[in-house]
Amino acid sequence: MVNFTAEYLGGLKCRAVHGPSGVQMLTDAPADVGGSGTTFSPTDLVATGLLTCIMTTMAMVAERNGIKLDGMSGTVEKAMRTSPPRRIDSLKIHLKMPIAADHPAVEKLKHAAQACPVHLSLHPDITENIEWEWAS
Image (tube, rainbow, N blue to C red):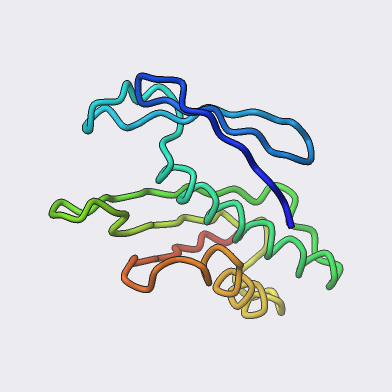
């Protein structure tokens, strides 16, 4: 079990603390709902969590199979619903892979991406799409 704490700072900002390490981060509400949008919003963290979880899970599989994924990078585009209730509508992920599309582990890595814990924790109504860019 990992514990986190958070404190409301006012102005729609919160400070969160990672219990084991003491590392702190701030969140802010998006500008379109009254925040200043100066840092990650809570839903931005969900989107970022998905992207980094996919990359980390694939990296764990790659390491177990002697595959180097150094240089792998990605982006995530978050879209919010336009009608109530306010929630994430879709997450579009683009992964730039340092291995070729014909590498023998491609299907294993794609499976790992779909099996990451954040993906498995998200509501099924959130549309997720992964675009792959393979090295040539």
